[in-house]
Length: 199
Image 1 (tube, rainbow, N blue to C red):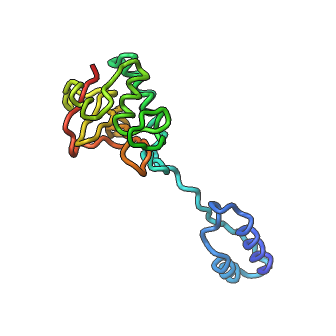
Image 2: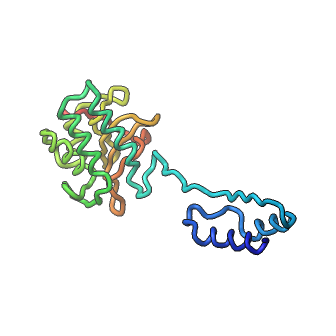
Image 3: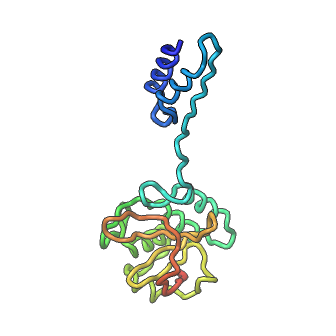
């Protein structure tokens, strides 16, 4: 009977998918069986480990969570403060998540920082200056407290788009630098020079 129990456990271990592998090894289970007398009804409970849930706030590819991106798209559509052009610019920026960075890239499949913001607003019918310095000079400063989704966030030599608030955090879309992809990340206060409103 002990041999049958051990064989059953071994076959379960081999045939179970990786994420359903028993947490206790055969040796421990067999020793547990050995302590039970022959003729006694055996009840074996094998503990299984469930696969981990994906983190809702960070994507496995380093480009940001698709869950958060989806929530933000829904929020800008529902936000009555936003014009149709502003709403579209934000949705276009969010859809570029995962595109490669390319210096001088203006889309539709690769971007640098100001290329992403000018492309998103361009698709919404607004022509922005091409460079981050040009966009910084062209936009109207509204400050952090007055920001809306679609406003541009300016740092030293860099620009990003503010895309809204979700899961207790403020978010922005950016094309960071060579080697990284367009990503959705938490908006940075550190180094922020200006929050610019597209006119």
